[in-house]
Amino acid sequence: MSTPSENSELPQALVDDLRALGGIRAPEELWMRVQEQRQISALAELESSQVVRAPEALWDRVQAARAARGEFAAPRGRVLPWKQLQILSAAAAVLVLGVIGFRYLGEENHTMVQPVLAGATDAATKEALRARALGMVVPPEELSPSARTVAQAFGAALPLEQSPKGMPEEGR
Amino acid sequence: MRRFLLLLPAVLFACEGQQATQTASKSTSSSGEQLAASAPPGGGLPQASGGAQARIYPDVAYPEDLEVEIVRLAELRDSAGLMQQLEERLLSNGLGNTQLTLQGVAAEVGQPLNNPTPAQSDRYLAQQGYYIKYRDLHLGASSALWQNYLVAQGAETVDIAGIACEHYTLTHQHGMGDAELFIDPASRLLMGWTLFDASGIATARMRVQSVNWSPNFGSASWPVPFVSEQDYAGAADDHLLGLPPLRPTYLPQGYYLAEARILFTEVLLPGFGNLLVERYSDGVRQLFLAQHERDLSPGHQPLANITQLRLSDLGGLRIAEGDPTLHRLYVVGDLPLSELHTIFGGMLPD
Image (cartoon, rainbow over all chains, first blue to last red; front, side, top):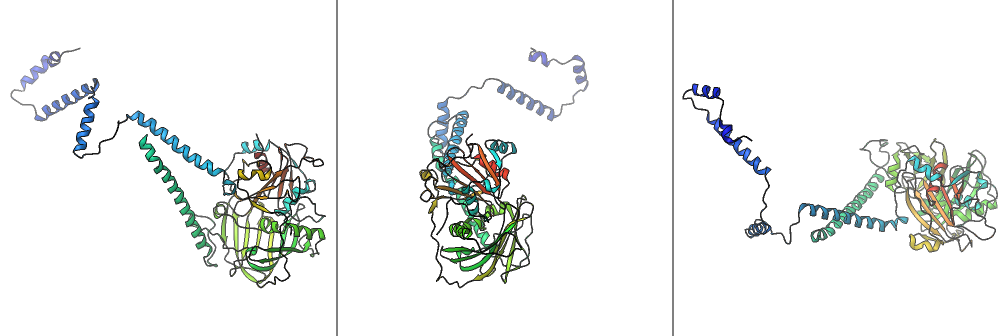
């Protein structure tokens, strides 16, 4: 690692050229830029080194003093680090979703008489549902009497033959 | 944590507020319905599409809600594809009492009406309440109607029974079958309706032939239902059914549960069990899921296999019937048989 003295030494040719300039001064701006660069370098060096934290008690005293001056209300209890706040926030979100979900589950028990719009289902799922039962297409005559009566009550055409019996009749 | 606990009621309150907002929106929609419905007729056809289109919910009164006597002609497509004609007389006192009688029957449009057979008259006598409630067209929730149909009022009136009626067309958004309504502009009475299938063929049609606004109830004998019924309130009522009902896990797009009723059929038909009827609606069309405990007494054999079901096309309506587990289940609607099969399968255990 080079020392500052080594870095301060300039090549002899450059020294000769500078001396050849005689009494001409360097612009003031050059000096200001050099100063800025030195400050930036110093800050970078400070950041790269380990930062020594102030004691918690000192922070508490500062907060209390600021509160006493009315700058803001002093927090009660311990101020939680960010990670703990994140964990608590996540837990809160889970709890809120759980409560809301429970509320909707509770409503699910009453959906029997509540309008619920149905959702879409993909073709593969529908095929799987159909596979649960073997369907046979039959003429209406091969339906059970109760099935025919239910269908008629819901709007199927009236049988022109003798009506089958055996299902709920609204009657009179 | 204490901060969170303090926030929790606020969060829930916010949820309540959101629900209240939704409720308010629904109220606004209802108001909108009334405004749209009460808009004067003859204002021209609404545009069939477009975001600025006014949503129309036809202002309609059903005969069973009015004091009226009507004669009407119902046409229902049968399994042979013929339009069966049924001439009916409906008497209503507007207080919940109705009487529907069959006056004439023809197997096909164009044939003369014949007197009904005793069996046909008996069937009407027995099921008249179901015909009025379930077979006759009733509009459902506006949200479903608007989700599934484009509703437009025709610029021209249509004459039915001497009344120039408003004509509404209900075009299904996904081509599942359109509908049309005819409404008396003065009384708002539903004077006629037609249901079409996906190919545009009429499957059911109703036209009022005459209206009497001063009916004579002197000779009326209001029918008393053989079977009492009540709303199904969920699991708390399962003991009335004998066993928990099968639940649908699949329903076609756009349908919502409009009503669930228990019919106390067991008193009338021992061994049959009480019937649970769930009525779903897409705003116009209806889908019925009916189930009861299977009769396991001797002589009442179940269908061959618990995983079998029978599918049949009855013309305008189709049905799926089967005996899954300890239930007998019926799925009835004008949907394709494959859809009824899917709904049925979705009610079976995995």
